[in-house]
Length: 416
Ligand SMILES: *Cc1c(COP(=O)(O)O)cnc(C)c1O
Image (cartoon, rainbow, N blue to C red; front, top):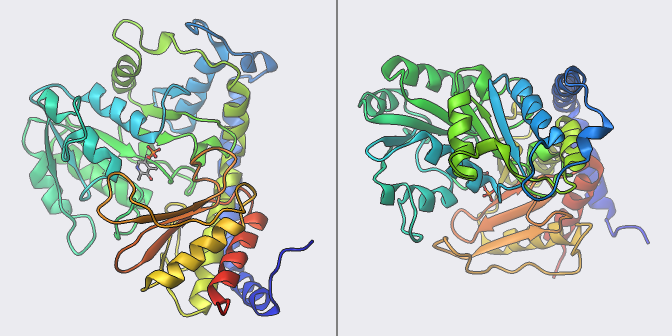
């Protein structure tokens, strides 16, 4: 039985795709360059079947794990890396990086307004229980956005204090309304920090940004990048985990925090995950491009229907997130339902807004993923508040992402 898509939606989709030819060519060119970058790292490190065997227990001498660290370090142009299935999510990896870089009495600065929601509990801006940076005596300051954009003068002022030992730059917008940062913009912020406080470590929350451009933040001045393996760099295949890549001392600090002082990177078995991590990384530049194409397709079709999008369909992309402003709760809910109906997994359930912990309003989430919570797979979520904006991301293949978007538009336009 074919998917139920009307002639009207098919025509809109054809128009949207035709309008995106040049944008798709740009995305393909980036994927090609990044694929070559990954392939050459695999070849340099002589990836072979033996790397996939993995270990159990302590995980000593896990060849595949240690080589994957080296491969990530090459791809991100860094001294070292830590790629582990023991990171439970991106928040955990960022948390380890921060705890590794900061001591009591130090100050952390967030460079572009409030960080991602889950980081507030880590830093201690909101009380989520014991163990926050704040509870260990690490101070925190954030540079507010100026006209919803980075404020380099404010950043210069904030980092001058010699107690500032780490600066967190978040590449993607998270649930904020600012634009995601380009690697070039991150480079400019890094220069400001280096000029006014050369001792502060620059940590970039790289979530959703990997492989969207041909450069990564560590090539323009960042000391460390951190991200989740169930987003871009896992290529849709990594079953869980996170990565950190950067300066050797910072990676070591994070490793000591992930495991324990004296053990660091030496332990951590991979129990059969290595093959998926390698294959996922190999696919990641392509998969990321599929998600970016799905995002711009969604943007274009919604623009044709008169909705406001950010970024617009034709803009240069800095991450895989697509914002669509619905302006009212009902169309937003219908769109999310349609995305769910278009998923390969759990297509039969209906998402409803719910009181998600940590949010001051209800949140609706549509996702039907092979890997729980994987947002490199087609997914859409939205806080149920003005301006009723959907945050849309993922799509393992453009073809399936496109079908999901068409079904969402079908649901949106349905008279019921
Ligand atoms: C996804 C994400 C994180 C980490 O989220 P987890 O759900 O813990 O993996 C952190 N920062 C940003 C900007 C993100 O998009």
